[in-house]
Image (tube, rainbow, N blue to C red; front, side):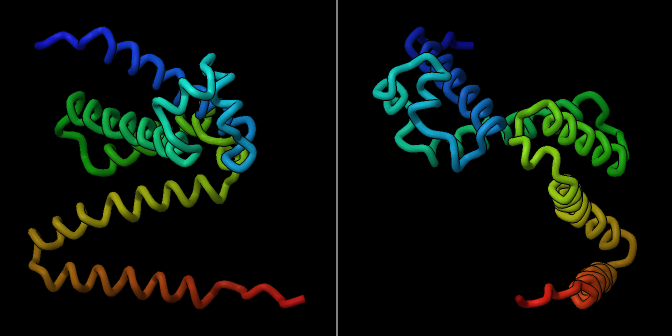
Length: 172
């Protein structure tokens, strides 16, 4: 395994400091109120040095999101390594617990972290997006593609029924 050159190590450490500063500011101020000047000050860099690594506020926020996604992917890989024979439900449960821990540890902004709707939305996305391929594959293996079609039609019907039951807000 080749060693990482010193310059790359320093660059990575600076970028980690910058992304850490972005995460802290996102938690305390939110994206709209966070400024590049504050990120530079929080990271202990000049604004010019910060711009050598990231060219805009949007790129800073994207880097923070990418680091969070990298952590999620690493968590999933570690989960697979620790218990490769775990059921799909156990895997989803572990991932949901990790997601909630990350949210409650302050990696996500407070307005998002404490919003029950946000947590429900995230859990629903994990369950809906994560379980659908697993269920579809199990149905295809068990009885063929017609079961997958029935599953998708049922999911669509439930979604349509939920949409139909939504109350429309009264116009002022």
